[in-house]
Structure formats: structure tokens, C-alpha cells
Amino acid sequence: MARSDVVDEPSLGEVSRRIDQVAVSLTQLVQRTEYTADRRFDDRRFTELESDVTELRRHLTEEMRALKTSIDAATERRGTNVRQAVYAGVLPAVLVLMGIVVQIWLARQGAA
Image (cartoon, rainbow, N blue to C red; front, side, top):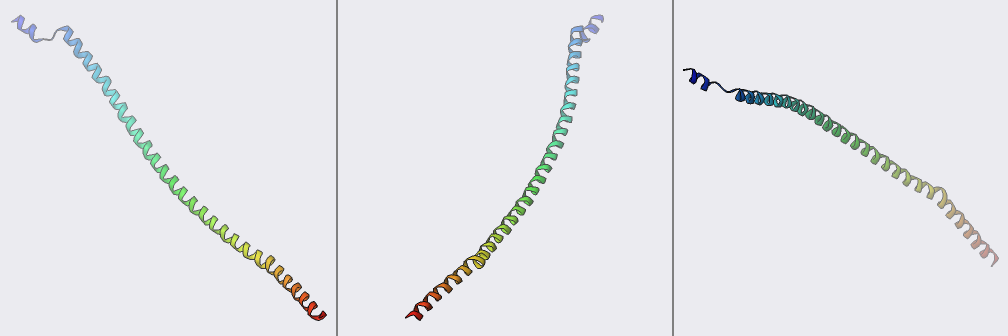
């Protein structure tokens, strides 16, 4: 009877191995907790980054739209400046030249 009780109980080496297994399991459990916390932090950070990228995209789109409007306005002003140059510079010069040509023609007609 005493022999069968001894056979059913684990040996000291077996108890030591099981304690080591429990210690390893506890260590992994702590690591899993840290892993889960790290994953939550990473997920939160990725969400923040996604919102930052979305905000930057929106801002860039607005800036591009404003730049296009500015370029269009500058192009329109440039066109207006060309017309002003024609009316203010070239047209009067052409009229003066026509006046000189008419005077020369009249002077030749009068001399003949």
C-alpha cells in the first residue's frame, strides 16, 4: 500500500519541471500583455497617421486650387497688359507714322 501511494505521486524532478513550465508560461503571459498593449499603441498611432495624411491631402488640394486660381489670375492680367501695351504704345505709334506718311504725300502733291 505504501508503494502504490509513492508511485502515484510525482517525483521531485517532475515537480521541478512543472514549476519551470509554469514560470515560462507566466513569462509568456506577461509578454502577451505587453504585446497587446504595443499593438493597441501601434493601432492608435496608425490611426493618427492616417488622419494626419488625410488632413495633409486636403490641405494640399486646397493649396493647389489656390495656386491654380493665382496662376489663372496672373495669366489674365498678363493678357490685359499686352492689350494695354498695344493700345497705349503701338497704336499711337502707327497713327503718328500714318500722319507723317500723309504729310509727306501732301507735300509731294503740293510740290508737283
